[in-house]
Length: 393
Image (cartoon, rainbow, N blue to C red; front, side, top):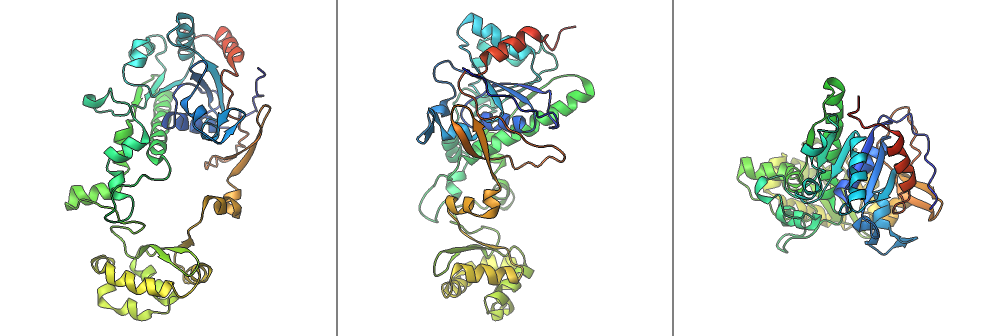
């Protein structure tokens, strides 16, 4: 199996940082992809035969791998190792001994059982930053598995998503996995920064549940400090009015009048200055209290013209507004098209993927395509053979 050429990424900030990636599915792979996008050398350790679960999560498939897998695994090298086999386990330990960071998202006992836990590895690599992304960081729940769907349910997110009175609805993307992965990447970068100062590795842990609860932000505060149990508001906001979508003649318009000045500008754009002068709507708190009557008034106005008319009128008035778009419409737009990169893959052909949103000053991203299963085994074995462990004198 031919290796994909490794591009020169020496201008990126994590150039020279090696990541031993024992993760699969979404939160962990997204975390390591972010680090890879920033220049780290990510060694993805996968199960022989099947690899990462998401390789099979399709259709669509491209040359045998699901688009799902391809979306979160660029800038990585792959080696297939069976941790139940002594030789493969020994090689996994050798990779960890030479790495700057290890990231894993197994159930709590798996890495320890194989001698790959933090306490095992820090004796041979005291500079190792060891990041775990379990389902729960809470000690009473550590042995439970974690998928985004169950986290959306158990963290309360489903209770605040969807239309009022219709029960919980799943968010259309596994966004809690994404958030946990970003929290983990942030923790890793902080640990690397601290290691630069004192030379010591450390353990970082981000539970999916804990990251999910942290992501409730204002909804959590509404309950903890205001005693208000949040519920589903559809596309409206529990604390701001008007901050929601409205039906126009040919689609929907999202309006974000997040303060009193923007509300007055909205009324002007709608040709209803009288609404701004109505004491029921003079302040945001008043508008929240009188949500139903105000929304009814505004809904009737929006239904008189098309989306383009209202977006233009509101933009002219300085009010944040946008059409609701489908995914194909997003990528047909200039700003959406600018987020697409085409990676040349020797097996799969050109891959159109969303690129990293991080623009790092002075560095040019030249990403590697997502790896084939075990594609870089010979390359990684040679690296282990020729590179001393991090803890060697």
